[in-house]
Length: 377
Ligand SMILES: [Zn+2]
Image 1: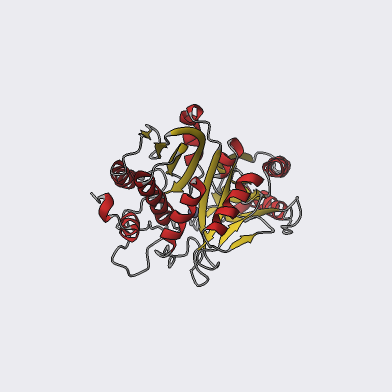
Image 2: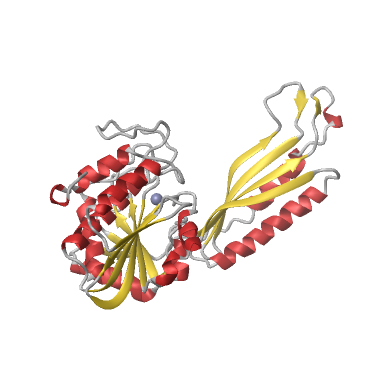
């Protein structure tokens, strides 16, 4: 076990990087973080049956505010292509979103709180599993463990490639979009490829649905009615040359600036699917929704605290005009407790998130720890 005295942020990140595991399967990562945390002697450590997430509680000497900091630790299903001694040990899975760095920053904060406990109030460190699938935050809320703590503030950071290393990026209100994915399954029936007219093809309905959903797009991010519907899969039939297509599937992601507009868009999608399927007698459809991410709603006071902490830490602060179009599971926590999700630049030349060449820069680790520690003060 790494002792507090020889705690090295880069080493910790490299070990987490090597352990990369996909969302919901972070067993070895959970064990590693738990071992590191125990060496920091928090007042309490909470683990849960249904999720690999962990909460560490550091109590201050006097009563005061309760602050929660989140660091996610799941990896993504992308092949490791970088040649480093700490490359992922799991084929097809690697830390390409920088969650190894986020978790290391939180462990760095744990070490700092061990050495210098908070004077007042208490600090909760939320090591989050299953962020990429939008499940971890909801799983934590479902345990009701936060009911006893009622955080006054919740904070999380995400590294942002393409931005100068260490620049803090903030925005009051919506910081990331509300996102949901949907599968639309169409079931007709197949026939011999020599007699396609005897099949009930899903193709005309599938084409009409795809075209109509794409026509809902409003690419103007400045508009409150910005929404993006992205076709991620369009398939009818199988690779069987003797068979005319009898079924099909369309997969879309929907994103909007806020939850209300996302809900409205979902209603329109359901209506379009229903109308187009009804035009083809005998065609049956089923639709499911998955991987929902609530829009992050940054509280103005929490955002101002982040800005002030950045300036006190001699970091550049950049206020964004527009939210990011990606979803972040932390959004769900900002809908329950006042808080802020903010960005931390991970370098102008850094490949984009989920790119196979992405690797969290070690230089950013102490900067993240310093910024979180400044928020504790
Ligand atoms: Zn991420």
